[in-house]
Amino acid sequence: MTDFAEPAEYADLRAAIREITMAHGSAEYAEHGRTCTPMSGLWNDLGKAGFIGINVPAEFGGGGAGMAELAMVAEESAAAGCPLLTLLVSSAIGVEVLNRHGSPQQKQAWLPRLADGGTKVVFAITEPDAGSNSHRITTTARRDGDDYLISGQKYYISGVDEAAAIITVTRTGVDPLTGKAELSLFLVPIDAPGLSWNRLEVAAQIPDRQFTVFYDDVRVPATALIGAEGQGWLPLFDGLNPERIAAAAIAVGIGRYAVDTAADYARSRNVWGQPIGAHQAVSHPLAKAKIQVELAALMTAKAAWLYDNGQAAGEAANMAKYAAAEAAVAAVDAAIQTHGGNGLSVEYGLMPLWGMARLLRIAPVNSEMVLNYVAQHTLKLPRSY
Ligand SMILES: Cc1cc2nc3c(=O)[nH]c(=O)nc-3n(C[C@H](O)[C@H](O)[C@H](O)COP(=O)(O)OP(=O)(O)OC[C@H]3O[C@@H](n4cnc5c(N)ncnc54)[C@H](O)[C@@H]3O)c2cc1C
Image (cartoon, rainbow, N blue to C red; front, side):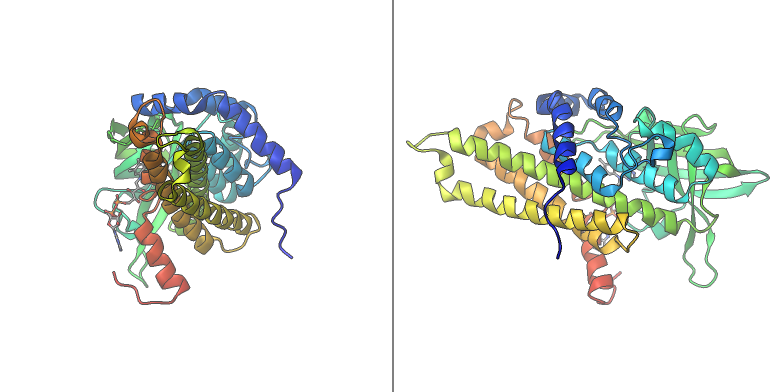
C-alpha cells in the first residue's frame, strides 16, 4: 500500500522553512522582483539553517537528504510568497551533478561550500542558435595540453553575478555512429580568464538576473571536466531531472500561495452583500486551480521519490514540471482575477508571481518539449522534428 501521509519530520521541516521565509515575506520578494536584486537575506537565512544544502551529503557538511527534501524547501519558500529560482540551478543541478559525477577533488572543493549556501554555482546550456535543441550547441571545448579551451556563447543564464562557477555544457566532438554532438560538462570558475558576461534584461519581475555569457578561449584545467569527455549526456540528464523536480516544486508553491491568498480575499471581499467567493464564477476557477496544484504536487513527490531511489525519473520529472507550471499559471491568473483591480496592485504582490509562474512554462524546459517527450517516449509516437 502506498502511504500518502507525510512523516512528522516532514511537517516540522515544512514549518521551519515556512517560518524563516515568512520573516521575509511576499512584500520583500515583490520589492526584490521590482528592483531585480537577489533575495540574499532569505537565501542566507535558509542556508544557515541547513536548507539550501539539504541534499548535500552529510560527509560534506550538508543535510544528507535528497530531492524530496530539497523539493520541500523549494515548495514551502514559494508557498510563503518567495519562489527562489537559484535553488533550481545551484542546489538542484549544481549539487546533484557534482555529487553524482564530480571527481573526489571536485566534491571536496565544492560540496562543503554549497552546503551552507555561501557559494552558488549556476548552469549554462542555452545558446541563441540552439534553443531547445541541445544537440545544436556550438560552444566548444578543445584539449590544449593539460587544459581545455572553451569558446562560444550562452544566453539567459541566471545568477551569474551571484555565482562562484558556471557548470557549462560544451561540445567536444561528434559521435561517428549517430552524427550527434558529444557533450562535455565543465565547472568554469567565474574568474577564469576569457570569461565575460552582459546583463540580459527580462521584463518579468524576478529577483535573480539573467546574462549573456561569452567564452573567449577560456582556459580551464582538465580537472574542471565533470565526468568523462564526450560523455556529458549522462551528468546532464542527472542534473536536468532534479532541476525539473525543483521547478515543479516551486510552481506548486506558487500555486498554493496564489490559491490561498485568493481564497482569503474571496472570503472577505464583499461588494453585493455577500463575499465574492459566493459567486461560482469566482469560486470555481479557484477550486479548479486547487485541484490542479494538488495533482501536480503528487507527481512532483513521485518524481523526487524515483530520483532519490535511483530509478528512471525523466518521465515523472517532465510530467511534474509540466503539470505544476500549467497549474501555477492558472492559479496566479485566477488569483489576479479574484482580486479585481487589486490583482494588479503593487500592494497585493501577485504580478511578480505571475512573472515567475509564466517563466516556469518556458524554462528550464518549455511545456511543448515536455509534450514532445511524453508523446515520443511514453506514447511511442513518431517524432515530428
Ligand atoms: C528568466 C529566464 C531564466 C533562464 N535561466 C537559464 C539558465 O540559468 N541556464 C540556461 O541554460 N538557460 C536558462 N534559460 C533559458 C531557457 O531554458 C530557454 O529559454 C528555454 O529552454 C527555451 O529555449 P528557447 O528560449 O531557445 O526557445 P526555442 O527553442 O527557440 O523555442 C521557442 C518556442 O518554440 C516552441 N518550440 C520549440 N521547439 C519545439 C518543438 N520541437 N516542438 C514544439 N514546439 C517547439 C516552444 O513553444 C518554445 O517555447 C532561462 C530563460 C529565461 C527566460
